[in-house]
Amino acid sequence: MKNILMAISFFLIAFNIYAEDVRPLSLTVLDAETGEPVPNVPVYYELLTAGRERFLLFFWKIDPVVYRPIIRKAYTTDNAGRVTISAESVSLRKHEQLFEERMYINIDHNRDKLNKYDADVFFSSKHDQWHNPVSDYMGVILCTATRAFGSDQIRGVKRNKGIMFESIFVDNSLAKKSDAIEIQLKREDESSRDL
Image 1 (cartoon, rainbow, N blue to C red):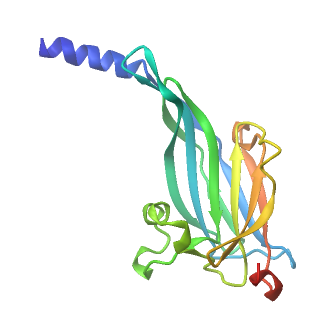
Image 2 (cartoon, rainbow, N blue to C red):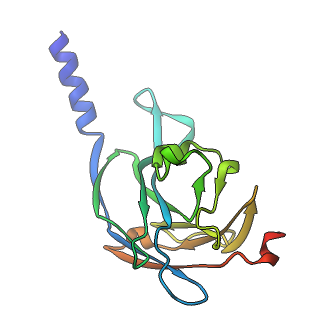
């Protein structure tokens, strides 16, 4: 009986998981005024899926869309201002698909230096604990997706508890075979500090 239950469990799991390839991404971070590369900038990367979870085997849950982070990594720009995010194969559930990438550029948590550039610590920190580690520049939250973003998702500068960042949305980037994105970090001038 135990072997039969194990075989059924394996069968259900094996047919409910599939592999999906995530394209490689080259990200270059430049100074918006000079066009020069900005080295040593933290970049936190998160890949989210969207899917449906079932309640029992055949019934949908009341809120059918579930978002799940499947990759969370920390990078730092090199002397040329670049970060290379390699192609990767991920395991998705049957009713799940790649949804969105989020990159937090020049945004870090205010915790001690021991946890510097630690993805687990960053993603568990609260937004009011964030700051711009390269203090001359604002941060950027870059979102890419397999789809076009809605018109309500507009590029703009925001201030949140002492951190300044710009939101940038890139349509259909995650659906490409590979991509290269250039981000221009704006300097945080005195007038923007008062927002």
